[in-house]
Image 1 (tube, one colour):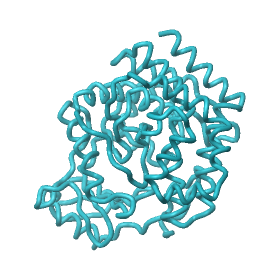
Image 2 (image 1 turned 30 degrees about the horizontal axis):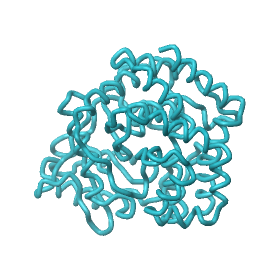
Image 3 (image 1 turned 30 degrees about the vertical axis):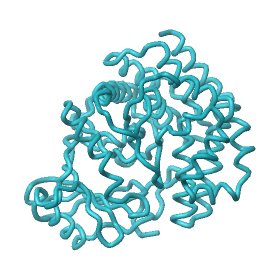
Image 4 (image 1 turned 135 degrees about the vertical axis):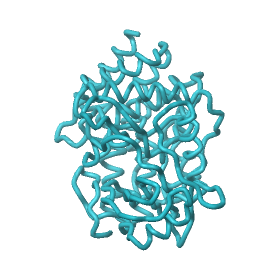
Length: 376
């Protein structure tokens, strides 16, 4: 851990997993990307976990430099998400461009790290100090986020990009291709040895089957036959920039680290699960005003047919499973933090499944989404 404070798993500030970027390091990285110019000033480091990032001012303007541990992201791992972002930008989405090295690459590997340099987006980082699972400030912001997500899906439908391969942190929707949750996780973990080692220490088959088996089977059936497309898979207020005058308008999209092939319904369900349930509250509840606003904003741009609506509702209880599994490996294996690995497993993997299946608030949330799905 480092002296830099970042968002912790409980919504608190905790020491960062990775050292902060230094001025000499930033200067050397910026120099490797000709379009980024020469470093002039270093801005505030990002409080977001799992990587290190800093805003910088150079002779060519404002940029954001992001550094990943190579065990989390290699340069080749960034290529598909950058290609996706460039496709969205070409379609008119506000995705800032990445600088390229002298060899034309958008990512740089150096000394066990992977770097990317992206033009700073226009707008205000309204949710900079909010954890990624905290809610929107009001339904108007949720509606704006929903509308832009619909535009993203319309553009993504034209992208013939295959699914990404295995990596340490992921949200690929791959588990949904098998209707048996325990079998799906076993097969997935076989290709992710760090996750397999962590699961071997826990009664995961019983824990997942208890609350996840039936919802997973229903979700797998609901997405069968839907057209696949790439999605953001991490859509929430703190991965967006906003109008500086406070208006509910998104001005930039960033952090495509979990983007992958899935379905529009999967991406919508992720957007609802990440930012419309008060997971950090003592008694989580679905914020129905925000959820309704996000869905209405989405459908103003891209109306959803009945099967997609039904899939959104079916996916909500299980859409987080793969990412929670990958966090288990990230904390338990890469960072060797048994306490945080236990939190990822007990609170975010098993706890979320139990909430949707057994908690009265979770059942109310499911009923709300099922009523919305049936109203279309």
